[in-house]
Image (cartoon, rainbow, N blue to C red; front, side, top):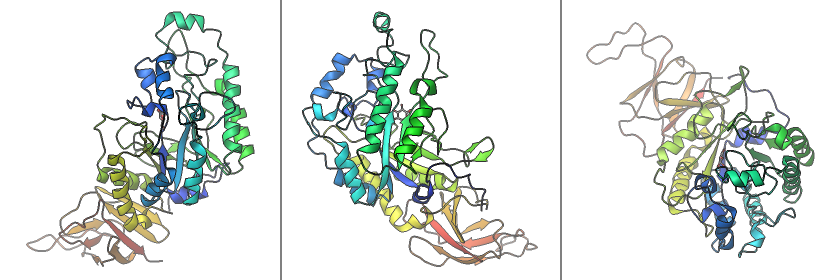
Length: 430
Ligand code: GLC
């Protein structure tokens, strides 16, 4: 087996087993429906963004439906935005008026969500934005929607990050004391390396990350925390790209979780056409686990509180693949064997899973596996796959393939199984 990461402070045992989670980005940015950064991108002032708060009424919201869709997709944990960069809070925080309970909807949206997912057996927790474009003490920087307004910047230059940090810590305390057991906390994000000349980015000193982390771990022993507070964490979070191999820090493998969108946007983005095909999504999940990581796949529910049809369609197709192939994902990790081109291995003890991203004609050759495999079968239907070791001195001729030392050759049907990514389960000899 590959070298495993050192344990971290939090309990990652469930995390590295479950492998597949649902990310939910939901807030009043679902109304403009033009990406969750719309306030920044379109430089929208508070008074103009207010209309989305004033018209927030998610009448079709039923978190039980969300939890069922996620469960059917094969997901095992959820991470939901308690607050995104626009500062809007989904729960009834005592520390702000800028929350769901003050919109026309009037009700807390987070409690029922946590309850619904828990009822379906999910682990989970919160994405909580470190950034806040609504809070009056959050100093204006280059990401702030008001960053171009020099006059506003001048008037607001007395903002005190320490007062904001107090609010941030206070809200984190609420999230970690009022919702029962929380397994994962996902803070977002630090950018102290940024320098706009007139303002600098923010990072651990601004968030008072060490204190925040200590409080989080004290309130929820065993919780795992991501790495975006600039002081490390239990796992790394590559975003919208697939790492080329197991992620490392200082040359050592670490726990990691790729976060990916269905269409390039996290928040609901009505006119977006960049939907990833199901095969690509399944391959991303496989690729992630083949490199020792997790996949947190996002859905951005709409303003009425539903997953849009294109998202549901994809979740269900992934779920159909997971129903047949979950064995090659849950409890699996990277393998030391090197797969053939266009293939990925995952491994769980003596079960090695060969995922074929393209379907070759009749044969696939597995280097290093001659005499190592007891039995081989297609996972989607449990049908036997015949194995051969071709004599290495055999030369290719009219009808025979040549052999190479140590190679196991599998005989495949000409027809690719009708699944998003076929998997062959190889039972290794003890
Ligand atoms: C980012 C973005 C954001 C998204 C997130 C997910 O850094 O600011 O909108 O919530 O990452 O990883």
